[in-house]
Image (tube, rainbow, N blue to C red; front, side, top):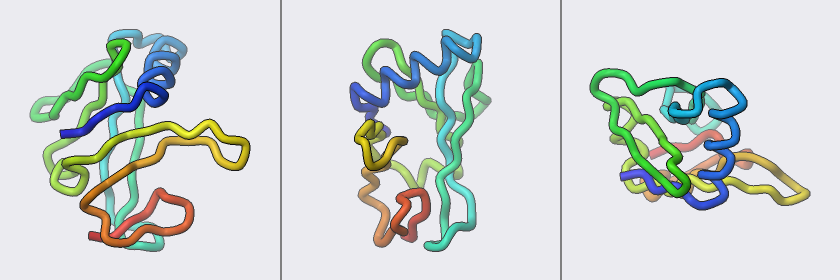
Length: 108
C-alpha cells in the first residue's frame, strides 16, 4: 500500500490539471542507480498501465506503481515538503535501510 499525504495530494491534483490530464496521476517507481543503489522515478501519466497498482488519496489524487517497483515501496507514505530549505516529494519508506542526503536514493 502507498499512502498519500494531503500536501502530496494537492500537488498531484495541481500538476495533473496543469499537464492536461485531470483524471491522471503520478507514476512512482524504482530503478537501479543513485548513490545508495536504488532511485525513485516520477512521471505524470494520463492512465495506469496493465498490472499497475492504483492508490487514491485525498482530493481524488492518484498514484500508479508498477509491480516490480511495488516490492520496494510497499508501505510508503508519499509526502510533499514545501519548506524554504527544500521542496519536493518525500518518501517515508519503511523498506529503506539507508538513504542518501538528497532523499531520492536508498538501499534495502
